[in-house]
Each structure stands twice: as C-alpha cells, then as structure tokens.
Image (tube, rainbow, N blue to C red; front, side, top):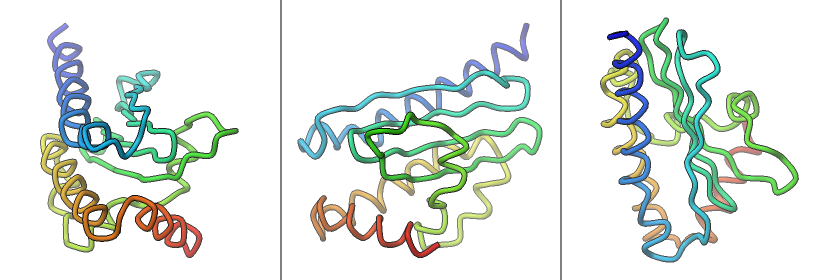
Length: 145
C-alpha cells in the first residue's frame, strides 16, 4: 500500500508541476485549451502525464524500473489522439533544452526541476519569437530528426 501511495504522490508532483509551469499558456492567451491526461496502465513500471493544448503536447514519462525521467514535445495533429508511442517517436524535449540535463534524468525526484527547465526554455523562446514562430521552428526541428 505504501508503494502505491508513493507512486500516486509522484504522479501528483508531475501533474501539479506541469500545470504550474505551463499555466502561462492560458494566462497569456497563447492557447485556448489546456488539459492534463495520464496513462497509468503500467503503473508498476512507470506512468505518463501529458499536457495538451490545441497545437502542442508536452509529455513526461517517469520510469520506476529505470529510475529515470523522459520528456517529449509534439505538435498536435487534429486527427490524431494523444498516444505516448507517437510522442516517443517525436521530438526529444531534452535535446531542445540545449544544456546538459543528463544528471536530472537518472532520478525520478528530479522531474520538477526538469519540467521547470523546459518551462523556462519554452517561455523564453515564446517571449523572444512569438508563439507562431516558436511553433514553426518546433515543426521544422521535428521534421529534421
């Protein structure tokens, strides 16, 4: 029972941090929709939490087996449902950060720091380039992989 409670607390931390970190999407009226979805189907191995807007998806995967965190960014295609396998084949958000964050990947407790770094990078990019240019650059970067 304690193990299940610990996993639930981990999920709450990731969900809460995604909402806190990316609330500027709504506050600054960059997107109209903002939802959080969770995939707990393999809870013993880990869990997935995605932040979904009408154009952008940010996914965080916490692996309990590997004791690691992974993060992906994808542009949303209106005819596709959000699926982690799609995100896994898409853009590696950690590469996008442009800094060495490998030390954050090896510990599930660092998920808050990782989300915070990603938020700062995305926020700065949107402030300097605008949301349209940010999404266009992201689309080009995803296309290059």
